[in-house]
Each structure stands twice: as structure tokens, then as C-alpha cells.
Length: 345
Image (cartoon, rainbow, N blue to C red; front, side, top):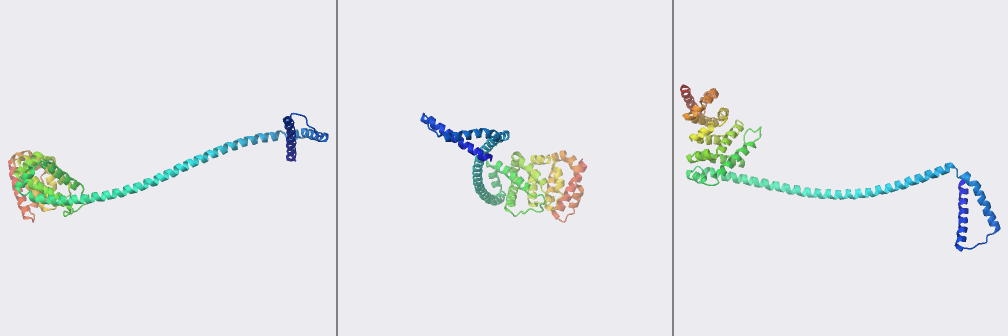
């Protein structure tokens, strides 16, 4: 009912406004039928009576609320539009990031393939270098048994550098041995490489000029060998231990060399520990080195208290009864030398 009245009001208002506009537009009077004017006047008066009843406080309040809601809706529409634009923006960024990610994955895969290829090449080169080093050092080991060849080697400007690298290589080899190793494969190229280096040092130390060279220019190498002898487990790397002990024995023939190694910290505890090795050849070379110390008066004077207080006589007595003839003879000779030592002390 109210909607119908309201619609009629709007129609009459529009008609009235149209007439006024027409009058204003023409700028002159117009003729209107008296009956139409009376009807229009009656309807306007009716509207004056009806409007206050229709436009009450609740409607006005609802209209205000409607305006507020429309304002909120417009604001929300703006916010939704902004969110939509933000969503499009972040979607574009996501697509760009995904594209970059795929690109990086492909690049990473390519780099990983290149790295694997480089590792493979490096491994092949390492194997080649080890094989070549083993062959060269084995040949040089054989050549170094010749005195003239040794003199030629020591006369080279690279001699000190070579023996320094030899010590570092032997140290690296021993450090690479696993903790639970029982017996190192001494037939591998790496083992042959290290044995060749140790053999060269042994042959050089067998000559007087070689001993002088090692004592004066490569004391670090001597320290390294004594340290490595203590680092290797008993029963492990027998060939390498024997060559190192032979080198130290050859150096001990030189009085200066004997003083140097005998005065090194832990030298005698190292010998006592090595005497417990199950290999008779190692024990044999340990006794030879010990005998070299005892037979040098000047060195013996300084070392006698330490030898006397820590010497493992029961172990030497046991070795004097060994089935190995050479070891048995040397152990008995050493016991005789020790008796002389006790009488002098």
C-alpha cells in the first residue's frame, strides 16, 4: 500500500516538475484545463495529508541505515577490488618465483652433474697420480741403493722439498688408516707409493752423506717418522714400520743423528711400546736401535737413567728365547750389553 502511494507521489512530482520546466523553458504562460488543475490540486493536498503518515521516524532511520550500509558496501567493494588487485600481483610474483625456482633447479642439476663429472675426473687423476707415484718411487727406491745416485739426488735443489713432501705423504697415509684396521693392503698403489718413499729415505740414510743431509736439513722428517711409529697400531703396516725403523737406525750411526733422536721426547717409551709388536722383524729393528744408543758412551751417559728406570727387561728376556734366530741372538747381545751398563752405573 505504502509502495503504491509512494510511486504515485513520485509520478505526480515528476509531472509537476515537467510542467514547470516546460513553462520555464518556453518563458510564457500555458493553458491548463481547469479540471486537470483541480485534479492535480486535489492530489497534491492528498499527498500533504498522506506523506507525514508514510515518512515516519522508523523509515527515516532505516533510510539513514540504508545509506550507511550502502557506504559500507561501497567501501567493501573498494577493499575487495584492492584485494583482488593484490591477489593478482602476488599471483604474478608467485608465478615469477616458481619460474625462477625451476630455472635454479635446472641450473643446480646441471652444476651437480658437472660436479659429479669433476669428482670422477679428480678421482681418475688421483688414481693416475698414485699409480704413477708408486711406479716412480719404486724405481727411485731401487736407484737410491747406488751411492752415486744418492749423491746426485741430494745435490738437487729440490732434495729438501722432496723429503719434506715424503714426510707429509707418509703422515697423510697413516692418518687415513681406519681405527679398526687389522692389516693394511700393502699391495695397493697407495701403499706402494708410501713404501717407495720410506725405502728411499732408508737408502739415503744408509750413506754417510745421506745421514748428514737428514740430520742437518730434514729433522722434521725424523720427527714425523717417530710420531707415525707411535700412531700405527701394533700388528699394522709391518713393512712401513720396518723401513722407518731401519731409517732411524741408519741415522743413529751418525753421532749427531743418534743424539737428536735419542733426546726426542717419548723416544724410549716408543721403543718399549714397539717391543710388544707381534712381528719379530719389528722387534729385531727396535733392539738394533736400542743397542746403537747403548754403544755410544756420550749418548748413554745422558740416557742411562731413563733406560734403567723404564727398560722392559722381562720382554727382552722373552725375546732372547724367540724361535727367530736373529732376534734371539740380538736380544742376548743386548742383555750382555746391559750388564756392562749396570756395572758402569
